[in-house]
Length: 319
Image: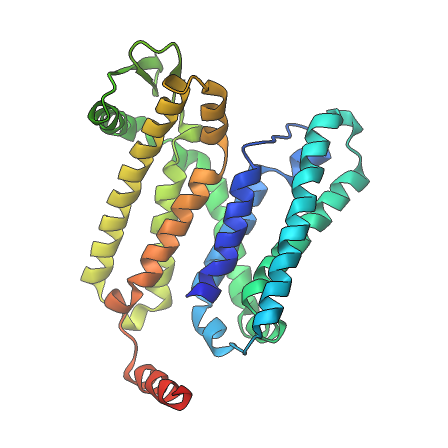
């Protein structure tokens, strides 16, 4: 489980730290650091791992601890360089002054961070065998990710129907913490949530409401369902899906309440806006979705008798 989720968790933390600090609107960096492009590649990577878990497990090769620590140190070094280089591009250069070789250097650092994160958990031999067995699944995962991102504006419009209940739940959470929430509408389908007596208020649009996180959970669940179709137990799978959607819905309401607390009680509306528009919460929800589905997989998708016998034999051989 650690080797499957480990690289994603490490990259998600690193991306989550960096994205609230910078935003490129035009030029070379706006193309490379585009949120839609990031969504395609990161979601495609997650879908590829989900589709090819059996191939990954079959490709496992031992890796020495010193190699893991070495690649982890390299990852921290490359990320440190990427972090500072990104801040330099955002603060010292105007949009038209960022040239193609700046963008190429930034892209190279991104690739080095990604490669070193994967090699921290998986040896190179495992990666080669994994890619040989699952290259067609990688293509399918990218196609699914591209289609999902294309449909994302329509998915985000579900906020138009869900915002009354979500805002009401967030207001109850604030009230439970001793705050006096106030609600309203800035415009059609754009609710307002604030704390009474505080000057700042939060206008929540469909672009920062994280409706796509709920849809991504459903997408992952459906992909896993059809990947293990002969073995899936439908009722347990449906229970996991419904409980997962409820959990993410409550967590999203909690997220909005925290953002209002930051904007109001902390008197830091700029931080609240940056967090609302960053990929930090989306990455967190994606990690929770993946973890929930993989941890519960043994319940809604029991292993075959042959796999169970093989795992028992490997454990006995290890002992």
